[in-house]
Amino acid sequence: MSAAAQAIPAVTIPEIGQPFGGGFFSGITRDPETGKCYLNITAGAEHELVGAWGKYGEKIEGADSFTNSRANTEAMAAAGSELAQKVLVLDIGGFTDWAIPARDVQELQYRHFKPTTEANWEYGRSGDNPNSEPVGQLYSAESPTQTSVEAFREGSPEAFQDRAYWSSSQRSANNAFTMGFDDGFQDSYGKNDECRVRPVRSQLID
Image 1 (tube, rainbow, N blue to C red):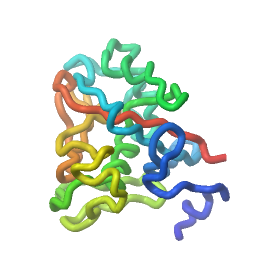
Image 2: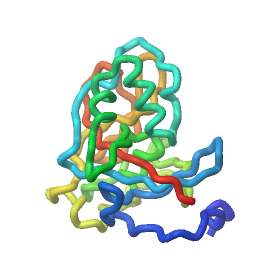
Image 3: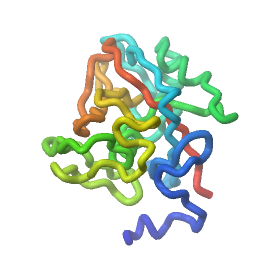
Image 4: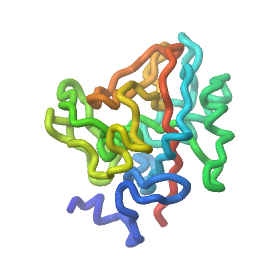
Protein backbone atom coordinates (compact mmCIF):
# COMPACT_ATOMS: atom_id res chain seq x y z
CA MET A 1 0.00 0.00 0.00
CA SER A 2 1.33 3.45 -0.91
CA ALA A 3 2.01 6.12 1.67
CA ALA A 4 -0.75 8.20 0.09
CA ALA A 5 -3.23 5.37 0.43
CA GLN A 6 -2.24 4.85 4.07
CA ALA A 7 -2.96 8.51 4.72
CA ILE A 8 -6.68 8.06 3.99
CA PRO A 9 -8.57 8.33 7.31
CA ALA A 10 -10.09 5.13 8.68
CA VAL A 11 -13.69 5.21 7.48
CA THR A 12 -16.00 2.62 6.05
CA ILE A 13 -15.39 2.67 2.30
CA PRO A 14 -18.18 1.15 0.20
CA GLU A 15 -17.52 -1.60 -2.31
CA ILE A 16 -17.21 -0.45 -5.93
CA GLY A 17 -20.70 -0.42 -7.44
CA GLN A 18 -22.46 -0.45 -4.08
CA PRO A 19 -25.51 1.83 -3.92
CA PHE A 20 -24.41 4.89 -1.98
CA GLY A 21 -25.29 8.56 -1.66
CA GLY A 22 -27.93 8.66 -4.37
CA GLY A 23 -25.95 6.59 -6.87
CA PHE A 24 -23.17 4.01 -6.93
CA PHE A 25 -19.71 4.26 -5.38
CA SER A 26 -17.15 4.60 -8.18
CA GLY A 27 -13.82 5.26 -6.47
CA ILE A 28 -11.66 7.71 -4.53
CA THR A 29 -9.85 10.81 -5.72
CA ARG A 30 -7.46 13.09 -3.88
CA ASP A 31 -7.54 16.85 -4.45
CA PRO A 32 -3.98 17.72 -5.52
CA GLU A 33 -4.23 21.19 -3.96
CA THR A 34 -5.62 20.33 -0.53
CA GLY A 35 -4.62 16.67 -0.22
CA LYS A 36 -8.16 15.80 0.88
CA CYS A 37 -9.76 12.57 -0.31
CA TYR A 38 -13.26 12.20 -1.70
CA LEU A 39 -15.66 9.34 -2.35
CA ASN A 40 -17.09 9.64 -5.87
CA ILE A 41 -20.66 8.57 -6.56
CA THR A 42 -21.97 7.90 -10.07
CA ALA A 43 -25.64 8.47 -10.85
CA GLY A 44 -27.81 5.75 -12.36
CA ALA A 45 -28.22 5.44 -16.13
CA GLU A 46 -31.71 6.97 -16.06
CA HIS A 47 -30.14 10.32 -15.18
CA GLU A 48 -27.86 10.60 -18.21
CA LEU A 49 -28.10 13.76 -20.27
CA VAL A 50 -26.97 14.66 -23.79
CA GLY A 51 -25.77 17.98 -25.11
CA ALA A 52 -22.98 20.31 -26.13
CA TRP A 53 -20.29 21.09 -23.54
CA GLY A 54 -20.41 24.81 -24.24
CA LYS A 55 -19.45 27.46 -26.76
CA TYR A 56 -16.69 26.53 -29.22
CA GLY A 57 -13.81 28.99 -29.04
CA GLU A 58 -14.55 30.21 -25.52
CA LYS A 59 -12.05 29.60 -22.72
CA ILE A 60 -13.91 29.29 -19.40
CA GLU A 61 -12.11 30.35 -16.26
CA GLY A 62 -12.48 27.81 -13.47
CA ALA A 63 -13.25 24.72 -15.58
CA ASP A 64 -9.76 23.21 -15.72
CA SER A 65 -9.68 20.94 -12.67
CA PHE A 66 -9.06 17.21 -13.16
CA THR A 67 -10.68 16.40 -9.78
CA ASN A 68 -13.21 19.09 -8.80
CA SER A 69 -16.27 18.15 -10.81
CA ARG A 70 -18.60 20.58 -9.09
CA ALA A 71 -16.37 23.65 -9.51
CA ASN A 72 -15.90 22.87 -13.20
CA THR A 73 -19.63 22.41 -13.74
CA GLU A 74 -20.53 25.61 -11.92
CA ALA A 75 -18.05 27.52 -14.09
CA MET A 76 -19.53 25.96 -17.22
CA ALA A 77 -23.06 26.86 -16.14
CA ALA A 78 -22.09 30.45 -15.33
CA ALA A 79 -20.64 30.74 -18.84
CA GLY A 80 -23.94 29.63 -20.37
CA SER A 81 -23.61 25.85 -20.77
CA GLU A 82 -27.17 24.49 -20.88
CA LEU A 83 -25.87 20.99 -20.24
CA ALA A 84 -24.13 22.08 -17.04
CA GLN A 85 -27.19 24.04 -15.95
CA LYS A 86 -29.36 20.93 -16.31
CA VAL A 87 -26.96 18.84 -14.23
CA LEU A 88 -26.79 21.41 -11.43
CA VAL A 89 -30.56 21.29 -10.83
CA LEU A 90 -30.73 17.50 -10.56
CA ASP A 91 -32.22 16.08 -7.37
CA ILE A 92 -31.42 12.37 -7.14
CA GLY A 93 -32.23 10.54 -3.95
CA GLY A 94 -32.46 13.84 -2.11
CA PHE A 95 -28.96 14.90 -3.16
CA THR A 96 -28.62 18.14 -5.13
CA ASP A 97 -24.84 18.50 -5.54
CA TRP A 98 -24.47 16.62 -8.84
CA ALA A 99 -21.92 17.60 -11.46
CA ILE A 100 -20.35 16.60 -14.77
CA PRO A 101 -17.35 14.44 -13.80
CA ALA A 102 -13.89 15.97 -13.93
CA ARG A 103 -11.37 14.08 -16.06
CA ASP A 104 -9.82 11.93 -13.31
CA VAL A 105 -13.21 11.29 -11.69
CA GLN A 106 -14.51 10.11 -15.07
CA GLU A 107 -11.50 7.84 -15.55
CA LEU A 108 -12.60 5.90 -12.46
CA GLN A 109 -16.03 5.42 -14.02
CA TYR A 110 -14.43 3.59 -16.93
CA ARG A 111 -11.84 1.75 -14.83
CA HIS A 112 -14.47 0.34 -12.50
CA PHE A 113 -17.58 0.24 -14.70
CA LYS A 114 -16.18 -0.71 -18.12
CA PRO A 115 -19.26 -2.12 -19.89
CA THR A 116 -17.69 -4.18 -22.69
CA THR A 117 -15.20 -6.99 -23.24
CA GLU A 118 -13.43 -5.02 -25.98
CA ALA A 119 -9.70 -4.40 -25.85
CA ASN A 120 -8.71 -1.09 -24.31
CA TRP A 121 -7.02 1.76 -26.13
CA GLU A 122 -3.41 1.37 -24.97
CA TYR A 123 -1.73 4.32 -26.63
CA GLY A 124 -1.15 7.87 -25.45
CA ARG A 125 -1.97 8.60 -21.80
CA SER A 126 -5.32 6.79 -21.43
CA GLY A 127 -5.70 5.51 -17.88
CA ASP A 128 -2.99 7.65 -16.32
CA ASN A 129 -4.63 8.97 -13.14
CA PRO A 130 -2.27 10.48 -10.54
CA ASN A 131 -5.20 11.79 -8.52
CA SER A 132 -6.96 8.51 -7.77
CA GLU A 133 -6.46 6.25 -4.76
CA PRO A 134 -4.73 4.01 -5.59
CA VAL A 135 -2.97 5.87 -8.41
CA GLY A 136 -4.28 4.74 -11.80
CA GLN A 137 -1.83 3.23 -14.27
CA LEU A 138 -1.91 3.38 -18.06
CA TYR A 139 -4.35 0.98 -19.69
CA SER A 140 -3.17 -2.14 -21.46
CA ALA A 141 -5.27 -3.95 -24.04
CA GLU A 142 -6.42 -6.38 -21.34
CA SER A 143 -6.67 -4.10 -18.30
CA PRO A 144 -9.08 -2.92 -17.09
CA THR A 145 -11.35 -5.85 -17.84
CA GLN A 146 -15.12 -5.75 -18.15
CA THR A 147 -16.58 -4.63 -14.84
CA SER A 148 -17.40 -7.25 -12.24
CA VAL A 149 -20.42 -5.16 -11.21
CA GLU A 150 -23.23 -6.94 -13.03
CA ALA A 151 -25.55 -3.93 -13.17
CA PHE A 152 -22.94 -1.98 -15.19
CA ARG A 153 -22.15 -4.66 -17.75
CA GLU A 154 -23.22 -4.11 -21.35
CA GLY A 155 -26.94 -4.80 -21.69
CA SER A 156 -27.61 -4.28 -17.97
CA PRO A 157 -29.69 -1.42 -16.51
CA GLU A 158 -26.84 0.84 -15.31
CA ALA A 159 -24.37 0.23 -18.13
CA PHE A 160 -22.62 3.09 -19.89
CA GLN A 161 -23.25 3.21 -23.63
CA ASP A 162 -20.46 2.37 -26.08
CA ARG A 163 -19.80 6.00 -26.98
CA ALA A 164 -18.08 9.17 -25.84
CA TYR A 165 -19.05 10.94 -22.62
CA TRP A 166 -18.15 14.47 -21.61
CA SER A 167 -15.95 15.31 -18.67
CA SER A 168 -16.17 18.81 -17.19
CA SER A 169 -12.43 19.42 -17.68
CA GLN A 170 -11.72 21.73 -20.60
CA ARG A 171 -8.60 21.24 -22.67
CA SER A 172 -8.59 24.53 -24.56
CA ALA A 173 -10.92 27.24 -25.80
CA ASN A 174 -12.15 24.80 -28.44
CA ASN A 175 -12.09 21.39 -26.78
CA ALA A 176 -12.95 19.52 -23.58
CA PHE A 177 -11.87 16.06 -22.42
CA THR A 178 -13.99 13.00 -23.18
CA MET A 179 -13.87 9.31 -22.41
CA GLY A 180 -14.91 6.62 -24.88
CA PHE A 181 -16.79 3.91 -23.00
CA ASP A 182 -16.22 1.39 -25.79
CA ASP A 183 -12.42 1.21 -25.42
CA GLY A 184 -11.38 3.76 -22.78
CA PHE A 185 -9.80 6.23 -25.18
CA GLN A 186 -9.34 9.55 -23.35
CA ASP A 187 -9.75 12.13 -26.08
CA SER A 188 -11.11 15.67 -26.51
CA TYR A 189 -14.01 16.85 -28.63
CA GLY A 190 -15.10 20.25 -29.87
CA LYS A 191 -17.17 21.96 -27.21
CA ASN A 192 -20.08 22.34 -29.62
CA ASP A 193 -20.28 18.56 -30.21
CA GLU A 194 -23.05 16.64 -28.49
CA CYS A 195 -22.02 13.87 -26.09
CA ARG A 196 -23.54 12.07 -23.16
CA VAL A 197 -22.98 12.90 -19.49
CA ARG A 198 -23.27 10.58 -16.50
CA PRO A 199 -23.53 12.85 -13.44
CA VAL A 200 -21.46 12.39 -10.31
CA ARG A 201 -21.26 13.80 -6.82
CA SER A 202 -18.45 13.62 -4.29
CA GLN A 203 -18.31 13.25 -0.53
CA LEU A 204 -15.37 14.30 1.62
CA ILE A 205 -13.73 11.52 3.61
CA ASP A 206 -13.38 12.92 7.11
